[in-house]
Image (cartoon, rainbow, N blue to C red):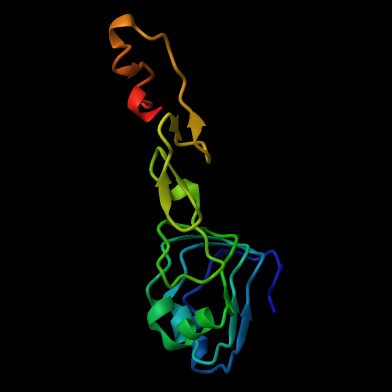
Length: 164
């Protein structure tokens, strides 16, 4: 096991080179600081019965081969593929591992992650590039002629009385 060994960097594609020579059944790389995307080499490990990649800095969309590769899909179905604590992009596919989550950092402005997809902030709230939660829009003075239209705010936050 290489769990919590302070390993870092991109997961190597070289995993595939060892796959034919190895009967590797359990690969535990959890709680390190691996970054980048999941390498396609994971699909070349035919004897895996458990794979732990949780607690790293992995990012990007979950690759389709996790679902289309029979060995990896079996790990997902048996909950033996662990990927929690990474920074995957939204939306997550329907088949995503049970513990997978996507982060707000990967959502467009004015949206937040519900851990599976990006959802818009509710009316009267916004999220800027640095925030992880929606915040209340700042309101400014309401002009008398604008009272029937709504509240005047900055450009990023248009609030209309019908939304309140």
